[in-house]
Length: 461
Image (cartoon, rainbow, N blue to C red; front, top):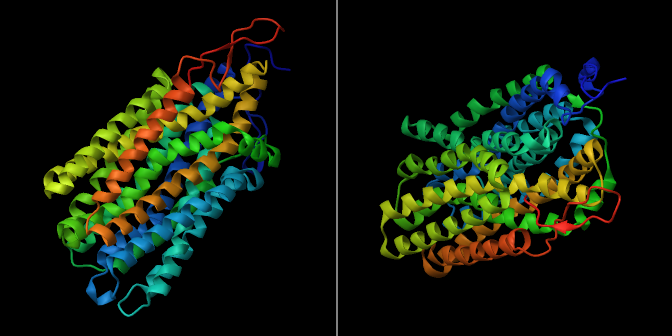
């Protein structure tokens, strides 16, 4: 028996499975849970980080592919679009793999799977390879995008609600940094006169290290059971799809621009691969580093408020990009693009923090209390994260296709930026009307203190 002020018995670590997990119990958290959760967070970040690097591998490889490869700019945008698409789609099954295999076990498997696209790219990366072969091998790299969904679902279960914004932001931000890190590595290799196989030769052993570290230091949570009902309930809930739409505006922008930035600089401003590589890593790096700050600000001030004003900032930065593109000002264009990356990272943190808050408030509205409310929130927020992450990543596909069409039609990315500006305006309107407008919201909070019917009031998410 465990009294209200007593921490539950230490978790059973046999076979790396933890039998009891109650992070909302402050005594348990301070005495037992926090140390375990932080350790799992660290090694989750390592695996997700390398997953992001492999997913965005082709945003770097296309910079190596000069005229001798026989690919047009449209071919390269199509290649990166398809890689992004696979990364978005596999996020759905990866979300539920945690409950089937366990968080630790699936981290080992998903890390090991990254060897497939890495070795395949090592084999075919040379002039004379057909576009269809490059496309097929590029599609394999998309599995790296799935690591985000399984990692976020796993870490969501480890942390209490009051810490989720920070924890999820740190987890995702550490993973997102995989984008600029592989771009920096490519910059160093291009600058030294090396080829793409040198880059791949660095990452293959790193994948093995991530899998081994997960096996040695991570844990599975017994109470994270495979729950197909949660997936169905999350899919039926309007907020899953509303938040998916909003996440397109933030993460879709981040991953889409990460793939496209270097190509835009090459095709619109005539930058060489080395010149493009010198700046392409800056935006993803800053956007990744600021994501935990977005989660922290959401914990403190409310995710909806931070997201709302973040969309305003993204709109302003996009308007500046349109002007810089029309004036052909490389310095202003690059600066505004980096600012847009930073804002997309901030919004990633704030929008993802909204998810557990939304479902926690729904639990309270149903009259649930304590651990029952927390369990309900974890159940639906964990299931919805995979769907939201998948749809959000599809935004990256849309961005690359929009750039492809804009370059085909106008010879520049200006047309695409006009479309992005309109989309951010819609995201602003949706955030305000659903989560901040002072009427009866879709996410109710209860002010009732008895068994009476709950009263609905404004909910802070």
